Amino acid sequence: MIEVLYFAWLRERIGERRERVETRAATVADLVAELAVRSEGHALAFADRTSLRVALDQELAGFDSPLTGVREVAFFPPMTGG
Image 1 (cartoon, one colour):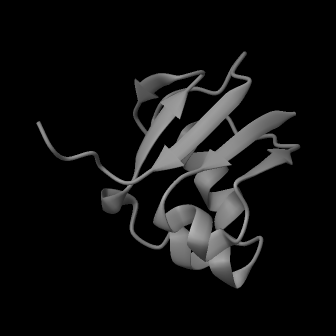
Image 2 (image 1 turned 45 degrees about the vertical axis):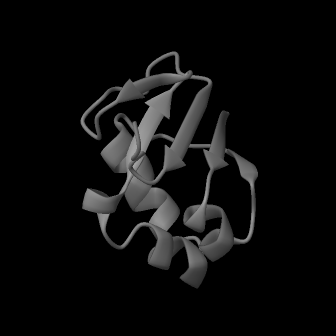
């Protein structure tokens, strides 16, 4: 089981702050593909990966990152500011 966290507009589109997911995904990209078909809100949230960032166990990661041993995946929009 992986804990998936959603922040900002992802949370608004999906309608949940977090969810526990049983997955066979090998990478973050595989997980995104699984999540995108869960609901219309998920599909909207994951429609454009270029507008997303991801953290695995609170460390920034890429969509090609493996999920082996990961307990938490967080999705959020790019951060701005200084």
